[in-house]
Amino acid sequence: MREEAGIVTRTTGADEGGAVGVTTSAPATNRPTPETPPPAASRARRRSVFHPFVWSPAVVVLLVLAVAWSAVADAHPYLLPRLGEVGAALTGDPTLFLTNAWSTLGIALVGVGVGAGSAFLLALLMSEIPVVRRAVMPFAVVLNVTPVVAITPALVVAFGFGMTPKVVVTAIITFFPVLINVATGLRSVPVPVLHVFRTLHASRWEVLLRLRIPNSLPYTLAALRVVLPLSLVGAVVAEFVAAGSSGGLGTMIRNSASTARLDHVYAGVACLAAMGVLLLALVTLAERRLLFWHESRRSTRA
Image (cartoon, rainbow, N blue to C red; front, side, top):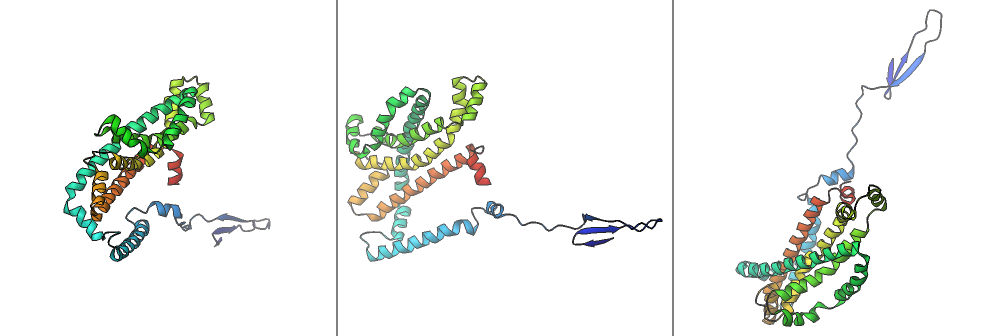
């Protein structure tokens, strides 16, 4: 018996009748096989956010932008303030920025609640009653293409100088994306699954709750990823235009720009950017928690 290249060869001797021995071979089972290296996708999955491969590209781009900003600020101080001045404005009076940021965030969240909530309910009606879709969709398109800044003074006249016109402006800005995405998700039900529900004699209410609404969840979260940061834009625009505004980052930026305090202007812009990133991160986290069953999450993990 000998072993060559992982094959065990065994030769039997000649029997008493002089017959030639028979040679048989079988794969060797006692030799260890080399381990295959993990694929690149497995190695990429094990990288955490603290791995240099993940955060180093963003840091490089940030450093390049900071150097370019400093060069322009040194050459033209009337166009851009120095980064140190912006940081000093933020740390010198943090209560001012926190108070105004909280005011703007409250307007944005209430506006999203009103706009996205009404858009979701209207999309449900449109999916169940086709005549509602034909009646409402043209007016929704007209509302979406109408410049909100142009009607903000009229909203101030109608609703006063308080929080209401700002919420209405934010709701108008966030209404149409949610309406379109939710309506698309409610209609894009897989036909074989819908046939299964009909075969089981599911009611219209059961089809809506167990099939259409879960199927529209990825579209709804995708719309929220757009409209939540966009709601800050709506709140700031309303604070810019609405007369009598006494708080909010938009009002602070407008007043600082009128007095040429560029450090406060860009400090307010930095606060708005940080708030937008935070809202987007919260929606992304909710999407990972709620859509663990969806094929998009499975394909990402694969």
